[in-house]
Length: 217
Length: 75
Image (tube, rainbow over all chains, first blue to last red; front, side):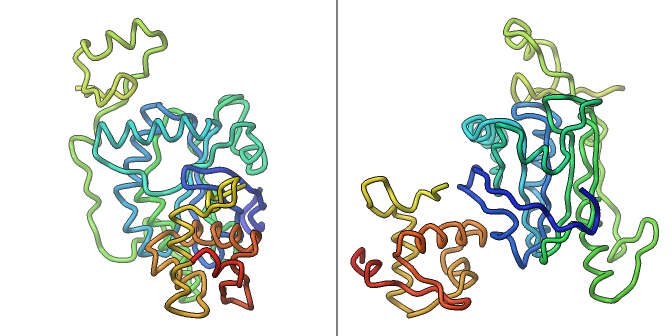
């Protein structure tokens, strides 16, 4: 899968019903991204951040689609958990790629990183279903959602004005708002029931048993 | 895969009924108009339209969708 290729077609079940891709998304920009697994902390921070910035994606006529090798029931349970614990609803579909066929098709499985979980891939696909940008992040590092928005802005600006954009280009002068919260790191989730039960007593900032942060200071 | 518009016994879901009721106001609609009227994502509307067309409840003529005689029987 390379930049400039037509996005391969597939049909899939999502948390918002079945989709036929890219047919159902023609005329829109698509941010098609994979995450390693449901109920994992880094992925949870990414989904919450995508959800909180949905209006920004809407303004750019861009539709978000998530994917992992989890079942639809798992996806639903996870996003209900996020809603319950944070009040934030995930307003975009998540593909249940249980057999990993879509992940294979899009090269989202990188065996050197994990043979069972998809890496943090992002495909930016234009309204004519052409792949315009691809980003890969490892399992351990959450993505910068503002950078994904900036990339869409850059692509749309390049298309509209027939220009290219330089390093660190932004459409309007802005200061990205990073706060103390952005300096915190994720505590790896517990791997046993016993550890999960104890997790909330260990002094971390926990949203739920699998989703805890701490400060490195 | 079903969008859940039509049950196994042939009944339409509330979501499907909401969609086909739009054709009481206007003879033909585009997918984008339907998406805007229902305030539902375009991809989801397109998936529902595909299912309803396959069931013979709607038909697509160029970029417009129209309700069929079979579709009218559900209203």
